[in-house]
Image (cartoon, rainbow, N blue to C red):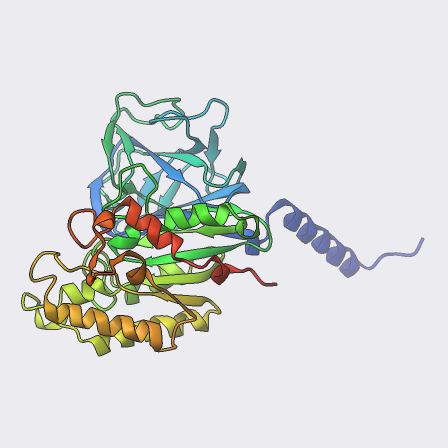
Length: 406
C-alpha cells in the first residue's frame, strides 16, 4: 500500500477541523443586533448581588449572545454566573426556559476596566418581539463602579442575597429603572438579515413614554418591521442617550466619540438613523460655556463627519429632522435656537448628504404652529413626545429604506 505523505494528512485533518468548526458555529455574518442600551454613566458598585433585567428583542433567531460592559469601570469587574430565560411577568421567568451563559466555556468572566465581553452563543429559539430575562451575579469585589444606561424606562430587579441568577422569581428584590452592564443582545438569524441603528439623544431613548411599555420610536419601528414578512430578518438596536450631543460631551460621550462603538460596531449593522443635534442647539444659548456655543455650521460639519464614517464602512445613514421644542424651558428654547433648528432641518432635507431623509419634524408638529409639537403628541415638557408622538414618528418612516439586497 503506498505511503500517504504526512503533509497531505495534516492538510486533510486541518480542513476537516475547519469544516467541523464552521458547522458548529453560526457564521459571523448571520449575527444581528436585536436589542441594545448605550452605556452612558457610572452607577453604584455591585457586591454579592444579583441583577435581573427584562429586554424586549426585535428580531428572532436560533441562538443568543450577550455583551456585558465595564466601560466606566476603573478596575477589572468579575461577573458570573449569567443566565438568560424567557420572561413570564414581573421578575419571573418561564419554567424550563432558563439557560446558563458561558464566556470562553466558563460560567464567569473578568471584564477589564474600560472594556466589554461578548458571551459564547447560547442555543435558544427566540421569537420576534419576545421578552427575555437576563440575570447576572457580581461577587464581592473591590468596589468597581457599575456601567449603566441611566434612563432604561424599564424595571430591573436587584437582590442583596448573593447568587440568585437561577431563581424562578425575585419577589422581594429592589427595583430600578437603569440598565446595568448589559449593552447588547445579538441573535443568529437569517443570512439576509441586518440591523437598523437608531442613533440619537433622549428622543430616541424614549424619554416621555411610559415605563415598561415599549413606546420608544425604535420599539415601534421594530414592531412595524416584524409585521411585514419582507422585513422580519431585520433587527433594531436603540442607541439613544438622554442629553447626548454631536459635538461635545453632555450625558455620555459625544456622538462623534461614541459612533464607532455604538453604531458602526453593532452586529449586522446596515442602516443608521441619525436624530441628533437638538441638545447641541439647546445648550448653546447664553448659559453655555464658550466651548458649548456651537453654530449651525459646526453641527452640520459634525453630521457630515458621521456620514463619511458610515459610508467608509459601507453603511447607509438616514438623516432625521429635529422635532419642535417651542415652550421648552428657557434658555434651552429661544427664538435664536429655533432659527438654528430650522436651518439644520433645511440642510438635512435639502443638503443631499444623507442617503435618505425621515421627516420627524413634519410628523409631530402642529400644522397651525409649526414651531410647536402637536398637543396630543406632547409629553408635557414641549420637547419630548409621549407614546402617541413616538408612534407617529415610527409611522413616518418608509420601510423601503431598509430593503435587504444581496
